[in-house]
Image 1: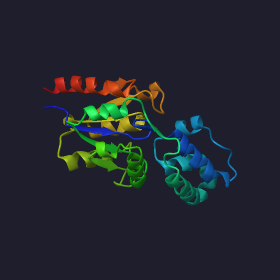
Image 2: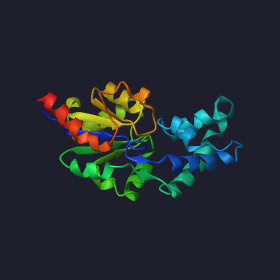
Image 3: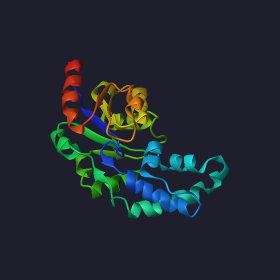
Length: 218
């Protein structure tokens, strides 16, 4: 038995999207009287999808404004998706080395935005499947998106791995019964990643970890 399926988070793992998301949030929230967010403010909240992020900002008292703010965000963000977003170091080169695996992206960003982002940054062709927050009935930290991908590829949980930068990725992976690899360069501090099976500081360290995991499956 060996590893056959690699699942990747998107924001904070493959691509640094923090500034574009921050700009879109500030555009959507400015007319509601909110002060501008910094990139650091945004990265602390990224992970559960834009709907949840906006709900956190609005709070209970202004929840009724949610849908209007989300629409403004999506209208702006979809037109400014890659103004500042960049592929993290070593991602492209490492993905080129991983052509022997099935590869999927599972993001809490909407599917059409995930596909568009990957395409605009010339990463889409590396992946066999892209799952967004609206692809399945639940999103990370639920196991459902992972189980959906595993079923589509007809592989076992022991043959599958998720790579991500947040506790939501780790929790989803553990619930689905697959190995988890956390990256430390993303949006979450290392203390949130300690439940991962493996932790790497650079994306190019991934192949070595995959070799270790596969050797233990033999």
